[in-house]
Image (cartoon, rainbow, N blue to C red; front, side, top):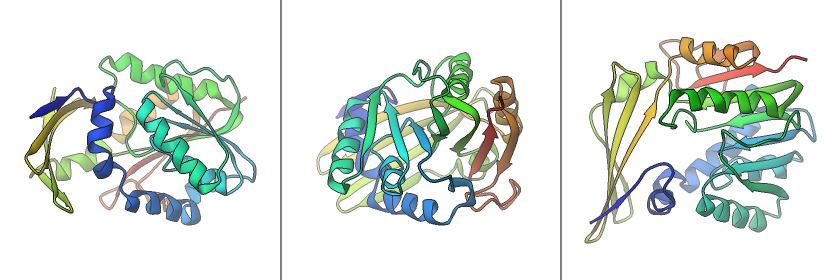
Length: 249
């Protein structure tokens, strides 16, 4: 049995990569960029994909003509992203950096943070700091799009355990609510033949009201919350919590 250390452990991303970033997820990103009104940007926009992972959005954005920078702390993730970019003939700038500390003041027209890549720092002040980094990186008039599983949505599906099979591999995810819904702990078990890998991840979860307040405190204006990339309301039919906000002059 092996155990990984969670979000900041490269072994975690390596072990669970196929479950987290299936080809279906890459195809989903392509479809969203083709159809979502929230992901439609002016031609040649300067786009920062903060916590870009293996290039799920960086590559299709670059192929659509945008000038894209992907930032991630994981060397393994960046290696996958660079390979995917090369295979697709997509020109992307990749930077290894902590999302709290990346510095590119007013360098981007769009900042993206996708697939619940927010809330995983142990100190909640660091999550707020990450939002301020996003604000700093945007040029005046620039747009933030932040996508995550909202607290209201997680409450619907935190139980029972999730079981996912890919070929002969099996993954089981069990979630536990902590601190009166301030955080969630996920315990993951991956079975590959006789090898068993365990990981425990803990992160802060946010309601729409909480996330809106944090964005406003970080300096964002015109903050809007949607229940999906199709622009639906954030209500009982929501599929995701998608926040869109603007950096004013």
